[in-house]
Image (cartoon, rainbow, N blue to C red; front, top):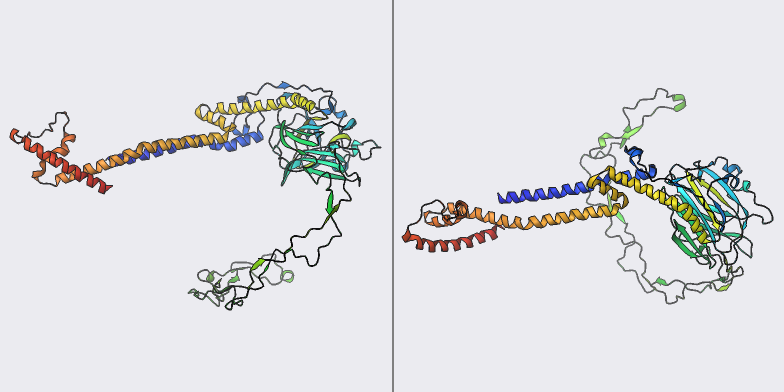
Length: 595
């Protein structure tokens, strides 16, 4: 009975632990899909209506009125408020005829009233639009250059560019014509996110003019960071500084920094020395570090004629193998099509199918399977040793680079005449806003704090409200878990698993010791009681000892039986003590044996 009770208790404890595990983890599992779907489809501050929760359940933060920043330090900025149409020109190139642009608030709410952006409206099309500067931007000695703008993917981005170009004039003596803007238009800098296939990076490409050849060469930033591919508005910033350093920031956080002289590919400045094209490797130059051992001899027992595979000599043809039966036969159930014309199509032949007679054993000429030949050694080759005549790897001598030049100030880029968007994208609803081009990084920060920062804070507050409403809708412990799971899913899962493991450990510690002791006591008591019934009348005092704890309910030592006579009490007491000691020894032996 004790053993059965402990077993039931253990099973109950394990069942309880598993039930608690399910209660902790089960509510969290569906939220992986639901949170992803809600983030992809729902507007900030709103629930996904596909989840069956109405917009009225989520309290959105009050919209903040958008105020267009003003600064004296921006060479160009654009908030798409007011007369933006007078500043931006859509390309007249036929390549971009199907690419539509629109200025609006986008599919997703930004949380700011009257906040407008430039939106790509056509999917799988080429787009081109440009804003000429009133006068070219010329980077002077000691100036920085800052280009900054916002991008928002109103749908999760899969394939397309969202970068901008700072354009230079094709002919300095002729004015820039914005209607002719296309992918061949010369630019100074291309900067921004691009994602399609294996490409997933923030571009920074600098076009640099070779002062000797006058040719323009593209220089690409190495180790480009990845884009931010979500539904929030992100701020992309590029800064070139007068010490020839550059820095890329996303949402005012630095994600890449480096040197224009060291971290561009190919380098801006060519090497000072190059290989001599007239230098040739001598005929006697030994550049093989290892060589076959000339003293090695093929062993006499080396047999190169043995094949790599041989027929298995132990293989036996299966019984029932049909040597004369074809492996395929014409389909007996096939019928000639009604429109079959023998004059045009020839004589009808039914399609071939596997011979059903071959299914059991096999058909056709039987051949044993091939196995590896244990005698195979292959073509003998001498072992390789170090070449005593090895000189080293030959390299041509270096000579001064006839095309060498050194640009010590690559940060002073060519004059910039316009900012343009020339894109090909498989997706639409890409939103651009709050462009800034200037020479003062602090002014760009002030501009961002007045334009992007309120929008970012509003989007964060809206997302917080959505998650909070989602948690309130699932009230109680599960609602709280859901709320924090949406914010920190990894920590919630680790915490839940850790809690369950601690609970299981405590339960195991509680039931482990009682199970062992109770089992031993119950087993010994059962064996001793059974043994007492098998003894003769002379062992009746052992029966009295064993039954004393069970039958004496009144605590007076009287088990309800006949009291022994006075003259026999002392003898019986001594004998009982001896019997007790013997019984304890026997019980211990039986317990150890049972264990």
